[in-house]
Picture 1 (cartoon, helix red, strand yellow):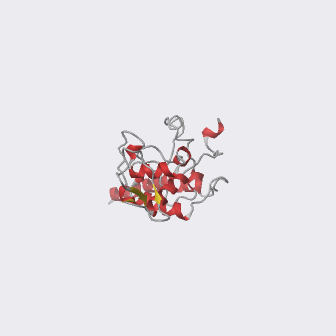
Picture 2: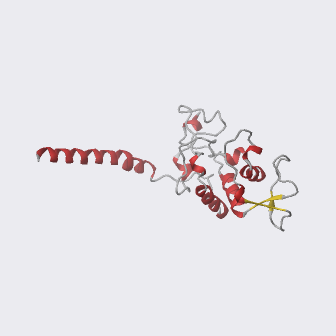
Picture 3: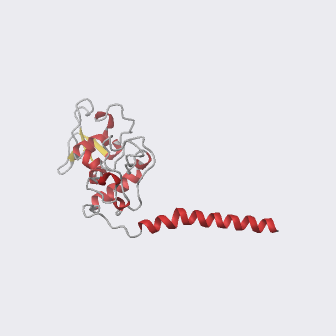
Length: 197
């Protein structure tokens, strides 16, 4: 009986220490964070695009958290400065990601600000990045003989365009592209080690 009490007591102490270290302390560190003045909230179209991003599992291959120079060459790759907690003020849920099968998207809107590029890349990634292993998201587009008024026809390289047809972006493709263009964190971050250099 005495050993059972010691075991349960030890387990409770370990659980309490782990909870304090992994939940309470991080919460105390970030609870009063305010968004940087340059960080803008998402538009309605970007929020819908964010849902498309989540629904299609983009977070499984792309991160949105460039690391500090001491932890990796993310800045040299052109992914931007290291992220700080305030950068994610409007992100619920946070889409940090842990895999880097594809490039980090924290600043993809600054690196690729072209809506045409994003739409074409979503339709056929290898047309824009040779050797890419990203799957094409053709189901976000319609291939038809002629576009209806107001539809966005995407411009593809000749080798990837369907012969005699046009590729039209569906609204969810437009929203996803707008979300990706909105990922632009090129403003300076006060509490970033890279910003102090």
